[in-house]
Length: 514
Length: 125
Image 1 (cartoon, rainbow over the protein chains, first blue to last red):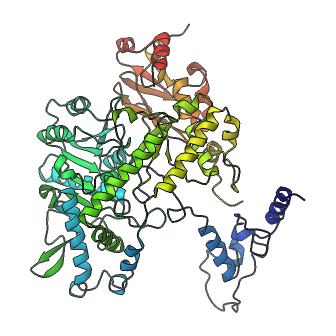
Image 2 (tube, chains in turn orange, blue):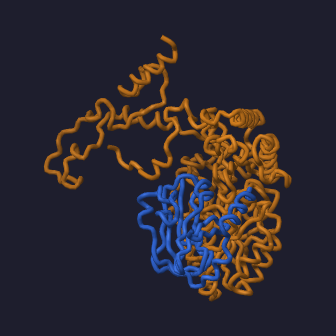
Image 3 (tube, rainbow over the protein chains, first blue to last red):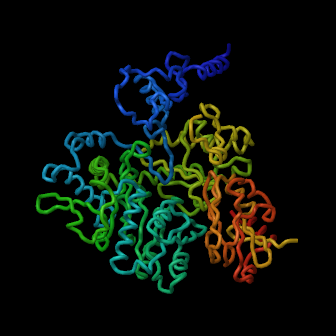
């Protein structure tokens, strides 16, 4: 029997039996707990309870269909599945606009120090002075890196930081009595989807600004949006811009745009998701930003994507600092103290229980201190260099809409324009990457350009791993050119689940077992 | 032959007196891929030209549908959410998303006719 036939047969056997060790080969497949051969055998026998009221809506526990397996069975089930999670610790993760980079283990070691790991947020401040000092130092580093002196660490994720930032702006307009007339928030068409969503959540109307052929926001497009319904822009509350933008380009006209925006009495919110390209090189406060969030779980290497939790502090100007959420950490003499509503009555209030994701604060500060100011500069330099290496290597194989304009920032943007002529789309290219053992890049984002692929290698990838990725991407482009569209449409072939029908899954979702 | 008009944002418009039936063009459909969801406007909603009034969503992305004219929504295609393939039909054969009663029919002159739209699409990218 050939090896192939053998493995086919064993796959059939395996689907008929419980997928556990002792079968042939290592197989990535796992039945649901309910489908285990003996899912009615709990690992623990307890006597039937006497005179106890059922808390399962009157139904005996056995009747509601919960699987009953032993502890090792349940443990292995979940541990096996956990090993299928593709992560940055497994391999290259080229997700653009997301900065999935290596999380140094030193951060973990420091976050596990008992003095950090075993404290409780309700402890008296006098007993956690060291922890408050960490938060205070982190606030200082973020203020220095952004040139925005007000820092609030409590938001628990990037989108939460956006919400905190936009609520800070709304609070400022409320305090100035202008909130009723300022109802519009400007965003470019290249914005992260969270930007218009945040503005809408804060009760604002979103006005789109088109970016030009060069992928950037122009002063002309900005002015048109600013003065569209009021000659002085007096109905504009804020502008939300990501810089570098989602095309991987540095927005060059920000100072002029920010000046006009401020003249109209509105504020500049910067989405800090792409700060990895700027850290140590450009301070957003210098190009007119009033408030921005920082994704500690992106730029400052704290765990992210299922491993979380995220952490999205905001940094703002002196003017806005009084309105931002509480608590923040202040230092009075030699004593660190949490500043709360009583200390800062103009604050918009509290957006999160306790003080934010303290474990992430420790990790981010560890990252900053271990790199130092010069090391953080190298981080952004190498991130940008790696992205440009990919762009330069692939720009003849794939359509790169902005490559002729010069270098990109930390993300390289390609599209499927060339491959589409041979029937191979961005989705097919992504699936081909899976077939070749790579996690795909971000696909179909940004949305205002057709068939986009956004690649972010980050600074922590070696040249060898980037070269392997480039080689595979070139092979894929050659395969498409050679007219292998049918093969592409069947990718991935060597995974336990083949190409899924995403349209059917969305149109007719099966949301329950059986 | 019924008059068809087109926008730069790839809406197509079927003109029926002072009412326009609005849908999306083949170009838009192909760019989006198969639809998985359509969000319809409320009846009576008052629109200014350029306002978004519906959302079409595919597995790739969600896109807004913009009003080609000023006017009020008088009807929405309630069959479409349950039968998304309708979007592939001609506007006057089930492919419409909403009907808008125009407040200024002169605005139709700003829209492209079929040959102008064809030329516009060919020059994209």
